[in-house]
Image (cartoon, rainbow, N blue to C red; front, side, top):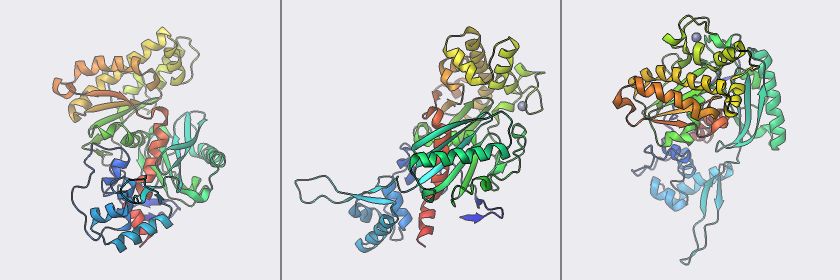
Length: 430
Ligand SMILES: [Zn+2]
């Protein structure tokens, strides 16, 4: 499944970053609370059920005793025992005494050991990077924000990320030997194979620079890279995507981006550039220069950086969209107006997207999300006014499940999809 990249990064041979990780038999998803998405095995498995398959059954809670595993898989008691022993020896599974019963001795229960290792997450933004140490269930153990100057390149940002992760590791009391993988997200288009930014005008200095070598000093673990909005979508597997298989995940921050999930599958596009919402041309931005070098983009009239630009032009001392949001939350009329207006402009563009894709839900996150009510009030006005009646009839507009932790949790899910996949577990025992 994995091939070692010449420069030391681990690269996947396939596009593995679907919202469902390939054939990880969707059973695993229900453990990630994708309950509504058809994950229960309805058919009895064959005798070829591998150790990876048995692990998945335990991890997703479908079979939690040796007897249940035997019934689900058709494996003999001996075969079940050998697979379970392998998983216990690897600390991926632990035994828990069953609760007392009046009918004899209760069977020993088997549970996934989310403490068997850790995952490092780094959600890199233009002005702030969030780093975290997570367990194997994707739960954040410790986290930290690293504020950085806008526009810095990887040679300045990545060493800071490494330092922050090392500090978090020390704080968590975990050894680097327990790191199972490192997940990184960046804005813009990503070259998933080379683990670098690809032709992204807003990430000047990052294009074609592999990021894995920067973090290789942290641990000898695989490194995965994904776009920031797609990572946010991955985090929703443990949230709204349990209910909605067709969804747009919109990140409204310094710029705009969208993660597109259709039929439960992430749509990344031919070159991984799908969802570039902020640079769709809109009449409202006509003549306005964009940070991408073009003009007339949605971001140029409604992105966080444009709101900061406009407030500063009015003499307000703000330097980041988070400051504008804070002012809005304090009741500042100008900031509230600008954020609502941003929602309106986004809604005009999203109306086209909604007509085209007919999502069941739009999930809004990013730095503007704390002002959700104000922002979404504007968004609803123009979205419902411009999209077709049927496309909006049952459309839900929601805030992200994990709020400002979406990025680091999504980076962890990105890693866990791979390192705990059935194929990966099998490979470790083949
Ligand atoms: Zn642009």
